[in-house]
Image 1 (cartoon, rainbow, N blue to C red):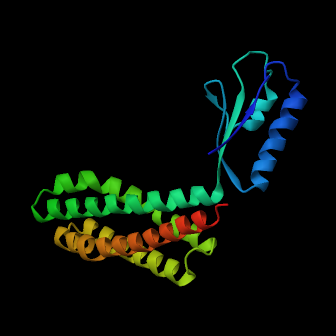
Image 2 (tube, helix red, strand yellow):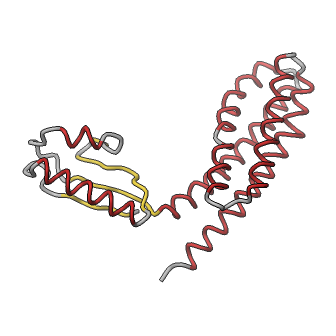
Length: 201
C-alpha cells in the first residue's frame, strides 16, 4: 500500500489544493497505481474528488491521505480472492444439491440468490483477465460459454420445477465448471505472485 499525505488543507487556497491533489493523482496513475481511497478526516472522498475540490475547506480535519496500490498487486489480490470465492461457491452448490435431493426445496432456494450473485462476477472477471492477456481468449470464451449454457439449463429446470434435473445440472455441470475455473485462477495467482517476487530489487 502506497500512501501520500497532504498537510495544511484548511489553510490551502482552493486552486493550490486542486493543483496538488490532481498532480498527485496523475503521478500515481503514471506509476500504474490504483487509488484505494482518498480520506480527509473521517470522510472518504475517493468517488467525489470534484465535489470535494469545489467546497470551501476552512475547517481543520487533519491531512488529506491518498492510499493506492500497484495495479499488479491489486490484480494478484483480486485473482486470489476470486479463486477463494469459487471455493465458497462450490460448497454452496454442494449444499443446494443436498437440499434438493433430500426434498428440502425451501432451504435450497434460500441459498440460490447467493449462488447466482457470486456467478454474476465470474464472466466479467474472465473477460478482464483475457483483455489483459493473462488468460488465452479461447479459455475465456470456453468458460463463459459453458457458464451461460449451464445457467440456461439451470433456469429451465427451475422454471419447470424439475428439481432432479436442477440438482444434476448443479452437481455435474456447474460444480465441474467452477472447479475448472478455480484451477485456472489458482494457477494464474501463482504466476502473478512469482512475477511480482521476481521483479523485486
